[in-house]
Image 1 (cartoon, rainbow, N blue to C red):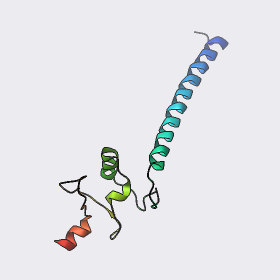
Image 2: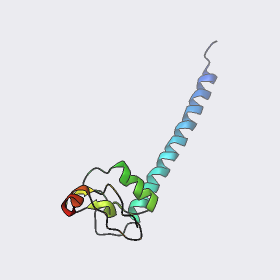
Image 3: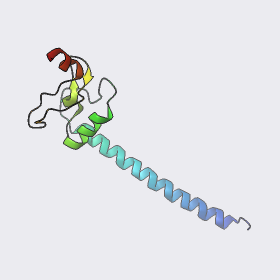
Image 4: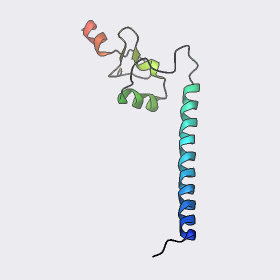
Length: 102
């Protein structure tokens, strides 16, 4: 099967269309991430001070809350379990807080 200029043209056209779709998807993801960052009107930084755990990311998405809710400022750790009455009452503690209390 001979490769013709026409077949190369259509292959490149198809690749171009796929790339444009991928770019549009990435732009949409970026726009959504920027909107999520801009919706928090706090004095805190929008960038967490330590790497975020997957569990904290899941809670943020599930409850629609900023990362500050799940961060212990005293010990600089992430909360690893939620209160029984969360999100109506929030007394979340990091592992070090629980060791000090217990």
